[in-house]
Amino acid sequence: MNISKQLPKVVCIVGATSSGKTALGIELAKKYSGEIINADARQVYQAFSIGTGKPMGGERYEKEDATYYLYKGVRHYLMDFLPPDRTFTVAEWKEKAYATVIDIVNRKHLPIIVGGTGLYIQALIDNYQIPEVPAQPSFREAMSEKPLDELVRMLIKLDPEAEKVVDIKNPRRVIRALEVITFTGEPFSEQRKKQDPIVEPLLIAIKRTPEVLKERMNKAVEQYIEEGWLDEIRRVKKQGVTWDAPAMTSIGYRELGGYVRGETTLEQAIQKTKEATWQYAKRQLTWFKRDQRIHWVQTVEEADELVQKWL
Image 1 (tube, helix red, strand yellow):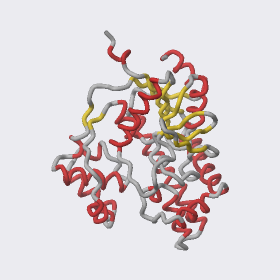
Image 2 (tube, helix red, strand yellow):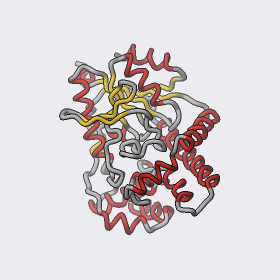
Image 3 (cartoon, one colour):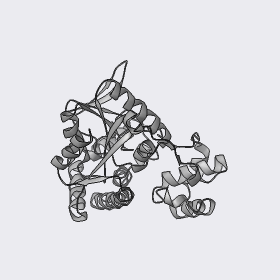
Image 4 (cartoon, one colour):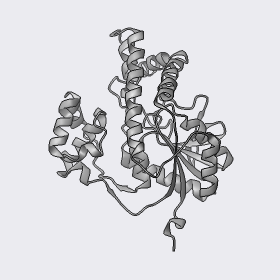
């Protein structure tokens, strides 16, 4: 018996920022009666919309049976629901995403996961057993005062294999790994173990040349500025969101925050945002290129053909 046939089918649209994941997800959702589960670690936050690339023009609904973000008639789950000062662990995302998959399948719709946070997606499709270590505020505060290179040295000393599974250029990910090691006494790399699969995934990514991808990202940053990104930052600050809140440390918000605080020029802040976004995209591409299960496509038609055959 093919056990995979008993598992819920899940389409995963993955890849780098600005590659076109959102548009492809919408196209497939409309054709195959799909509902989308967000796998972008920044789009989970309320009030942080423009700079996170959240689909603009959508509306959040809170009903007895579900909370979702409706965009172009398609439900988006795990999007625009979390307060900006809350952390959201990989374990939490996996648990909520799987429960949402089951709910979507039970209603005879197709779950479509869309996002560029590779660890989220891998945790679900490979059914990682993730250590459930609660956030330790005092530990995080102490670690956040250290420079990133020192944090990385500490991590590698405690767990030489950690750099294979941790984004060592992301301070929050490094601190989280140190937190888990400290409060469990075990190497972080040995705590994330694959278990029997719980979904049957089809992974699709849009192939872009580095030149095209970089151009799309730069245009996106400029468009976000025109759409009011700076006003959004000022607005959430007035609402009491601190500069060190998890949502505010997202790419672009921290760089443009320097301008809002009067520490740099707008031109410098925009350039720093573009550079940080490109560096993040390169890390995303490195992550996803390692996964041989991903089908790289250039058009919606290619993706559509893959889904048709797979279903």
